[in-house]
Image (cartoon, one colour):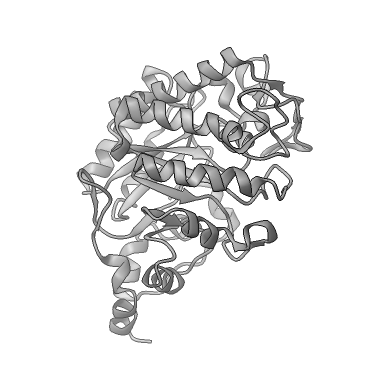
Length: 355
């Protein structure tokens, strides 16, 4: 296939996309959030991270690596934060560099929930919807075995909601164009949305509306602080990471997705590593299920090649595509697609350095 043919076949990926009244993306390709564990000991972004993101500014939108909203949110080593002035200043260097190259960038807000570990925050309790532990140990630090979390009290929940909103405000101070709330992949918000991890019988458990309440309250608090045009949300309706599936989970998302549609967010981002996975209780792929229940801007993800993504967008399966590992291997990913140049294959050893 010639470069001309390749570029023509992918033309819809390079179209500008009006995310909302205030944000227009230069193309439909998003750099997915990629946890790299490269912040310094104080969880401040480094100069290497500044260069790393700046080299990828040609993406229509960069979503930062997951960034913890407060100390007890940490579940992996050297993940950046957004709760100290030093961290805000470190991220400001990143956003300045990305904006200088014409890029746009959202910060992904993260609390790891029951896969947090006291090792990272000097001891204390791990918060989750219920006292249901995850089996296993911390990636990159396998000597740290997961602990049984504390079921968050109503006061704990209000504190968490406040801290998500404060983190969003901090992200604006750091120069981000918006935030993506991480509500997927078994972490804190997602744990409220699935029966395996949410065994509560109060206002935050037991029924679809109750189980969706925390996610919606976090969204509403962030929107109140920075605006709906600056707020996105990542979701995993199919339980597959850090939790077991339950057919009752579908009822929670059947309730949640229409509620989110009324809030007119910047986007909803599907949180799955491989969109070829099918879930019986969702009737197939997660992306097909979400599109059937959510009609506004949807970001697809999950091992898509550029031709696959172009075809999916043409078929209205989603509006934007998030690309992950190929962006690690190819800082010039967009330029390579435009020219038809061959992509450098991703290798796991690339995770050890920022290029």
